[in-house]
Image (cartoon, rainbow, N blue to C red; front, side, top):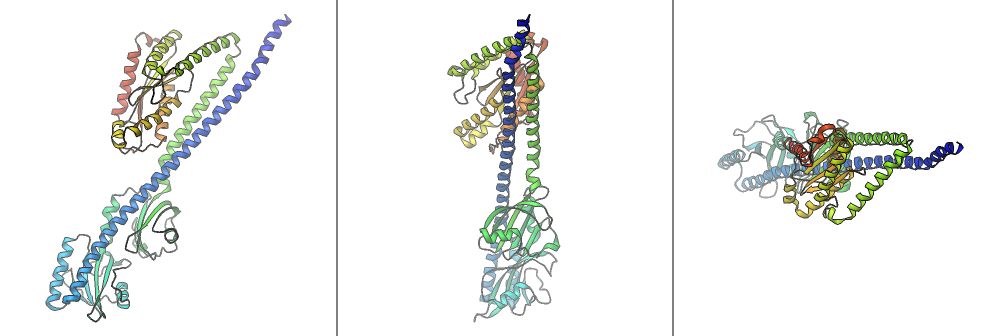
Length: 513
């Protein structure tokens, strides 16, 4: 009788180290899962930031190209006008011919708002507007500059409101000299500020993005969103201009704007040959808004997985009180694990490219698990997934890069099949499959969503995809209870394949259950 009592006591004493080890293992798994989740979230943030840097740099380059083109056109026209004026003069018949020539130029060159010639007193000698404006422009900054500076290079001034049309314009001017080199007047080409709007409208600046032009001395030419009172503001002490002076002609920085207090990622660039700085910026909130949503989803999935692991551990602890049942389950699990390890070590059952189970192993496992699920009345789930736009990827990047991407996707799929009985396999080409024994449709859906998020978080660039990244579409089919009478492996495959097709026709990068 005493030995009978001591036997359970010895059994419980022997189980305590095992329970302790399992508790430590559970803690390590949960910690590793949280660490992997944190690393994934941080990595995706860095990827999003790099993508935003590329986007703002491209926008700044586009703005610089458009501004450079407009100013070069004005520069070429001014060069011709100055040459004609100095050679033929701008009075009498020569002045009339010059005025007619200016009018023809403005009709042909849409970037030009107006062309003007002033004499040494600032009086209008010729204009593309047809009728000279009464008065003079001797008080304008560009006139004073050319009058006091003998250099003949093109001068770009701060924006002013046109006295003839009332529009805000950017003056681009050249000095005109007499034959003896003395000051003879100014040739002026004006560019309308609103002529740059068509380029700005094509840029995706988000909800709080901005672009601006400024002279090299810090004088603001234009800023979007447009505020008239900001034109001519001195930005020389701002972060962009300081970075330009310290780091060179182009750069990217994250700063809080003085004007509106919004933190943005700025990319700036100086025009080649002209003293103008252009900058494009995206707000930090716009850059990371989608990343925050995705990060919360990934974190939620990780916490759900941890909760599931804890629940499973507690259930296992209760079951360990039933010694005979536990020993039987351990023997079965050990046999299945040994068979799975033997199968993995056999190259005939492994896909050479991805190291996943091949089609032969998949077919055999699906048939075996279907029979076991029917015998033990357990659910059986199957996930079929396909890499979206993979042919376009191969066409754009080559088959070697395509193979690398298949290996990356395979690694993400293999990470989903975490239990002993689960099987991740390459079904064929860019298609993969995951067999989930003892898993209902809700559990299989969680696994499928985790696969989709993991592949998306890889951040593999794919120019042929609408979202610019490699994604997967998934179909999830489950059989349970009385379904086994009619659920052959082929029928289960057909159901999963139909759901996969549903995901692809619905727009790809999604899960259909």
